[in-house]
Length: 306
Ligand code: BDR
Ligand code: CA
Image 1: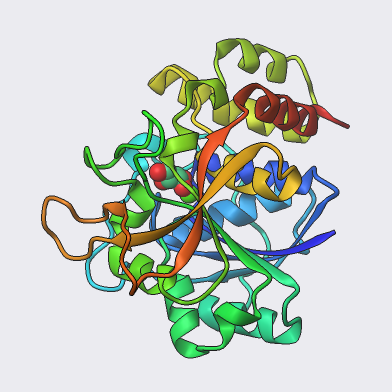
Image 2 (image 1 turned 90 degrees about the horizontal axis):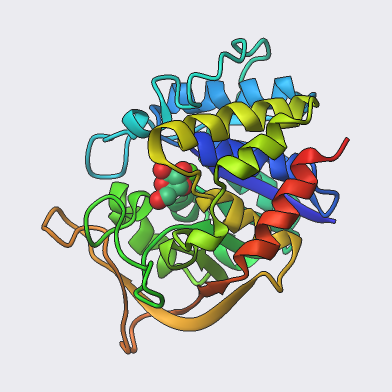
């Protein structure tokens, strides 16, 4: 079983990924850190705890992280995810407190306590991860691996921007942090829009009917989240669940090894992730294809099981 520590910004697809993880025996979520991204960080951490408590997983600690990206104020995505960040799903507020450590301290401690064992999953802007790597420079090499949702690499027709025409949201939100993480020496698996925007990996209204027919807590919550996306956006993109899927079945996605440059600053190309032949960049694994139908089958079978 894989030990996962997870940095997230829930967010509808982060929450769907979390449900998927909690229903998957192959991973054990040992802790969650939250970051400003889809929602302000207080709301993101409330959401992580609302989901955990609703699914009977309140024993998983949640540590609060950065309230804004390294060099700029947050520009959240509540207009996309609903004013509560979870499609106005009406889950009750959390009862349990946050874990007392700050996110970066929690990340450092979790990895130092179990060197080479922790898989870090990052499904929001990379601010907390950058802070943790700065705090403990040995951290990248002590990780088992880092699986992240972020970037658009031009490897498929879908690998274009979703936040600007050229940049993906998580990287665009904090490109300085992404630059630090992408040159940290960690063993990185980047799942970007090239695969997550593949229409074959997207939930539609028929999938929603299947989920609605089931009456377990996981299925009920998933139905509310997916329904919001289908209603307002036509389908439910599975960005963050696809990053988690890498840990559940490594035959679902293909990866190519590439050197990736991240455009920092505030110009038109802010947050662009470019595959470049430069000697100064490290190699990372970039997702280049997904078996969409098989991924959706796996997702639904986990979400719908008892
Ligand atoms: C990413 O941005 C966020 O809105 C989603 O949660 C996902 O992590 C997709 O670009
Ligand atoms: Ca996210």
